[in-house]
Image (cartoon, rainbow, N blue to C red; front, side, top):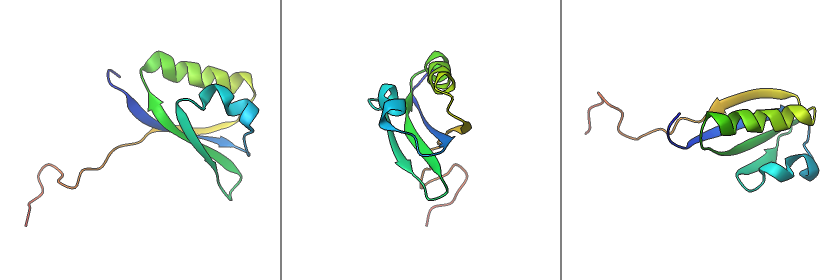
Length: 82
């Protein structure tokens, strides 16, 4: 991972501001009706990603998923334009 990549991190439950405080400068968050908290933000490198996970593990957050968000382009390679 050489460039910044936008990641989505989903954790079980409605995370409190106290739990998320170390992440708030880099991530936005929202709570879903399914009882999860979704964090979205830029990760600079693998060490940053591991640090985020270590923080969440240290506060006993149940991480459901960590996924890079793929930006979609309106003109995909191989597609024909009108």
